[in-house]
Length: 374
Image (cartoon, rainbow, N blue to C red; front, side, top):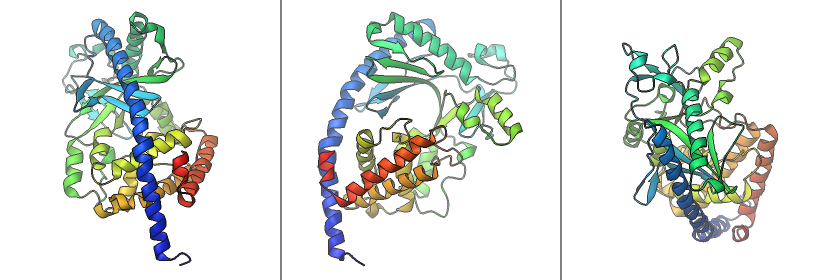
């Protein structure tokens, strides 16, 4: 070994101390900025949903505050916020998770149920599927009308060129509004392999708890997921993608990151991302970082490996894995490894991301004072 053990320990100790200072100063500063913007985002969302509900009683605002946090609000970055609108009456549909569009599932009218009797009759296809695209189009129209009626209309504008429901606030940040169904107590077939029995983490008890928390189906444009090399499969996927609902596992992911310094590591990585890896094409999203933290948990399954004293090693490992994924141009979803999180991201953006991530990692390892300059 070229460097004495005490030198390595001393270097790691300095890095941990620098990360602690960075967390206290810069992560806290980011939270304050985000907190102020969340207040405005919530006000705008409540105002828009008030007008939406008046025209469409089936779309009720589910944005509520609990324990100092807003349920249904997700912060993608300090400039991007997502509001999830949970819908009722999913019970009349069966979940069909056949893998036609990776990472997505369809909702099919239950046997014996008449289309005309459904609460969502006008959004059900002739084949009995609840069309995500049709519902999103209707919701987009309602939100656009609400923007015109809103008390904040001078500060708002709809984002065009997309089927997603997005609103720009003061041309500073974006509010993404998403329709969703919550699937409690069930686990999708596409994720049935999780957890790997050969791995010690997360353990039987925590895994059972995570699976009971279920998952969420959201209305998203998933046409980029429908690309298949096989022509027949491609045609089937493209036909199906308009009716499919994307599966997300936010609550399950959060449960897995509750102990040790896992959340602390993620908060530091998000702040570093905002300052150094916020690049065109968004190759390094906060969700990519969250996914890599979960993979790092599998590599380091013991709780002592997530003590604060090991924080430098964990962040270094995650950044190196990020570089590897960017260079390989593939980052598998944690629960749905058949889904590539880099799909649709330009190759040039991935290359730039790898270069920038390597520069960041190198500076963190060789110059602990670098964090004070971030």
